[in-house]
Amino acid sequence: MKVLSFTIGPLETGAYLVVDKGSRQALLIDPGLESEGIYDVVLEEGLELCAIVNTHGHFDHVCGNAFFKAKTGAPVLIHREDVAIMQQAAQQALTFGFQVPTPPPPDRLLTEGDEVAIGESRMQVLHTPGHTPGGICLYGDGAAFVGDTLFARSIGRTDMVGGSLEVLLASIRSKLLSLPDETVVYPGHGPPTTIGEERAHNPFLTGRGGTPLLLFDA
Image (cartoon, rainbow, N blue to C red):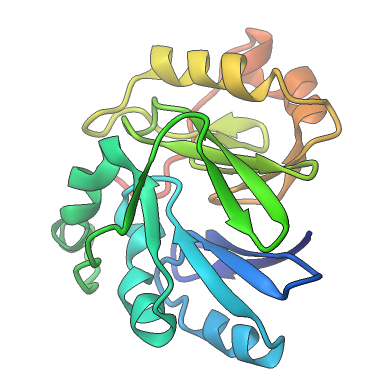
């Protein structure tokens, strides 16, 4: 697989195209604010968008769904426990000073252990609640797309509706730290890292304390 990374919008959301090189099919992960330019890359690379996957339902990760669904017809996938959050994305965005379109309803509801196909490649769904109840990570081919579950030297905030620090840390330890150390971690904000780096240096995982990454003030 090939990974194309994008830092988009004022909240610098990490969006990703995961491309199966053989079929030229691509998975779009977390199209957020000002993500429309990614469509130009889809066209330039001659890609077929096979699905849009949201790692969770917050507005800065789902507000591009309507644009890409209209342009490509690709199905929208999200964990069943974050559907309600996604449905409130436009209202949530207004609270933080942004006006975004209402996301379309999902076409497929994900759960732990599901697979998402990209041509001949497969990504495994890991349910990692804590930032939101239906937060997920996608794992395959030595890469993990983790949304706002884990960041380089930090973790996602847990002070919003449905968040829990205890649950988030349990998710990270059981689902992500079980992956090989060389696994490349592509987060929802900030630079990529690896499981080994975070195991060794993330203050939340080493017992040294830390402050969750706050992308917008509640």
